[in-house]
Image (cartoon, rainbow, N blue to C red; front, top):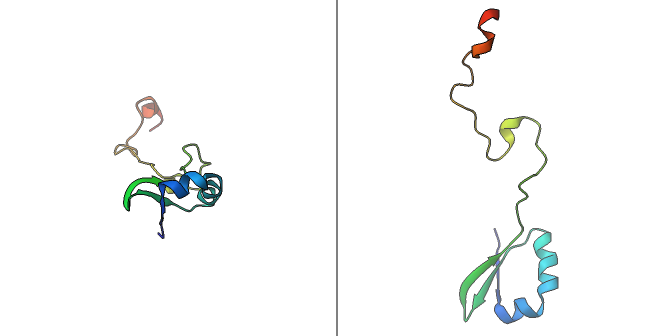
Length: 77
């Protein structure tokens, strides 16, 4: 990823323009005297719509016993 570095003064002076670029997906390291002190980037939405196929969603985990018979289904098996 091509993260850009900007100084604290520039970030403060041009914050609204920088935020518009962040919304489009850009990330910026904010520096103080040439040292990176913060990362400004887009927020990953926690409640993003599900993608088709639940295993494609980030954070999806299947329980190890997913294929075990259910207790209340014993009479049908």
